[in-house]
Image (cartoon, rainbow, N blue to C red; front, side, top):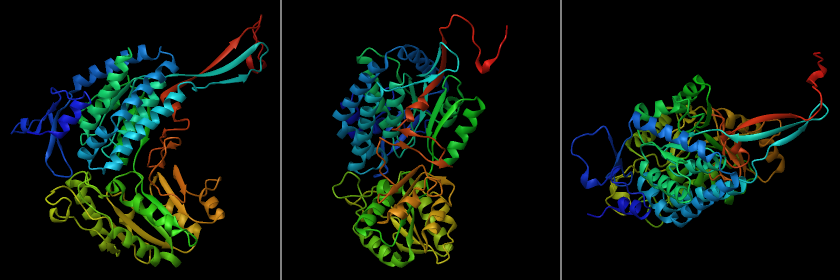
Length: 519
């Protein structure tokens, strides 16, 4: 019997049959030690994955600590060469890895491969960074003294990732942590363990082939057996966690309780503002991609559209025409732009939000329904498909459901009369991840990006670009309930290191600071 995922894993050197079980070998009775990975496209099993126990996690953390003690002594530029080789291997296997992502989480081919490209890009960034882990030199008030700062490896890093970016988010963390001298222990989502197995196998194999074992580690398990003990373990000085706000609060509480560090990338309820002078030829496709890309399952998905009242009807009409061209179906089929939601629970959440919007006085302009098997391409798919929805808020703009982050392709449309009103609406949610404005006015753009902080309160702010599609060169993350973490580019590397201030005296006598005499 053909087993596509197994063949793909085998081609990557990642098929460990002690860990991964073929669909035709799955047990008939429930097995708590086995995670059944189901395709969101077909609702059929892709594979079974053996889960790690708490004891196995303990051993993995111990191995990560031992690996760190050796890896931190490797010069940073040499660590960079290891990361370069890992990036090259991801580049070579981009198509296979992208296909695994599409099969496992339902991303269309372009998005699956695009996610692998993010790992390649962050590896390239990290290679350059390996020669730029700069400290500072500061003048001392004491004669014949100097002060320097240096950045040192932090320790084994715990990385917890979500299903929607099963490859890239690990890469953002792992490539930077590796050049900083840290080992990495990865706990992936149980909805996407096959992608994690493939990515980990490549990174671990490349590092080992260059003489560096123990840098990369993987623990796949339930929250009870793996998640909770992982975030509580003092041997992991930093936990980088991506997921829901609810999950982030739990991680933050536990890690703070042991005085560890957190890097949290949590939910988003992102808005795009459309000014009267906006170029709708740019705004409409940007909004569509932001709202329906990854079937609305991005933390940066455009969930709220704030459009000036004078152009609202025209903008909505254009959006509807664009939505009518969107093909929903098999993410691996040519021409499909929207694949399935991850599971039935996500479909239920989508339908529940649509019902709530109706009850709160909103109008469903288009979409808002489940797509049956007879409408999917090719015919006969039985996965978790929905029709992307545009929901127009009542004239009062009072729509409580829009304050929730529903992880599905629902775009709520609001109107405004003045830009300050739109900025206030942008900021009037608990999350603060991504935001956008479409305008031809430099004044409007600058008000949105106001240096006083009176503009968008989000970690990401775009002008004439959509809310999704961040490049790796800039720091990625958000404020408020989004968690305050920063990953990827800029100086995000500092999260994976510890700062040490060094004062050096070379005088022939003892001189105290602040002019103190103690003789």
